[in-house]
Length: 190
Image 1 (tube, one colour):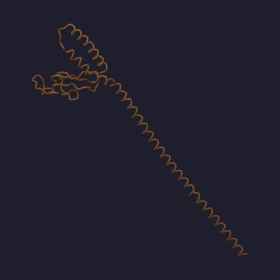
Image 2 (cartoon, rainbow, N blue to C red):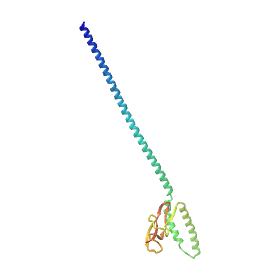
Image 3 (cartoon, rainbow, N blue to C red):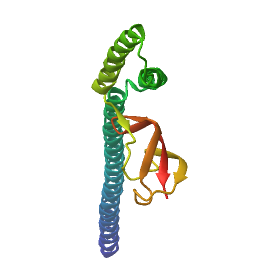
């Protein structure tokens, strides 16, 4: 009987050990599974955070590009409105030069004088229309030479004027707002 008891005890001990081993195995497996799932969740969370950051960056870049586009468009429209009459003004400048040459003619003939009076009225109307669009004359005698506004054709010595001063205007220059349409051709003192 003792053998049977000892045999039963051994079996019970073995059964308990097996149960304990199974429990240990189950306990050991559960944390690993949990850790794996937590690791997967952390990886997913990090991936989602990276995607959100990338999308935010794309959104910010797109917003900045759109703002730049709106600003450029606004500036282009403003420049177009400001200089819309440039081409017409450039085409009218030779006609104005010819009017000025014609009006410089002096005559005692009454018919020529009345014709010149009519031409002067048309000339003034053209000048007024250009002035209303922002076209101004540049290049006056006595002002300092400016290479952005004047084209020096000749240099002359002058006791009356300082150096680099416009002595004579050979052809008037014109500017539209702040843009030079044609520089004034001038003689400059040396």
